[in-house]
Length: 70
Picture 1: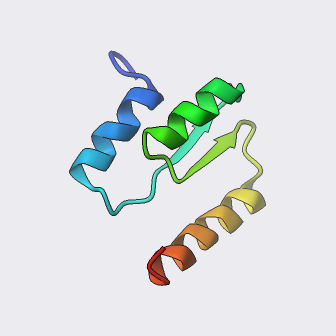
Picture 2: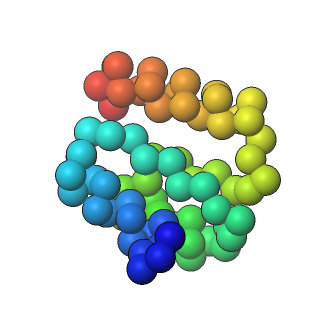
Picture 3: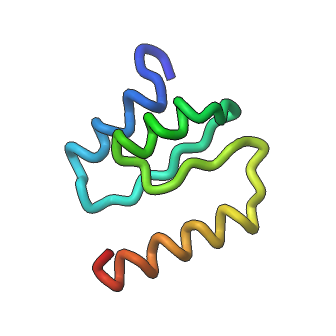
């Protein structure tokens, strides 16, 4: 993304849509990056290469949590 990193994008999305779950997907999964994504509002951090069954389960879990109100 020219001019903005994914970590910069997360709070922008949350500012506009605080109710929207945000998944951060990155090839870099050092602890500082994961923690920064969560602190900025990401619901889930997933490392590339993406395990699609795991991604589907994570999405299902976030949707179920949102429906329960948490």
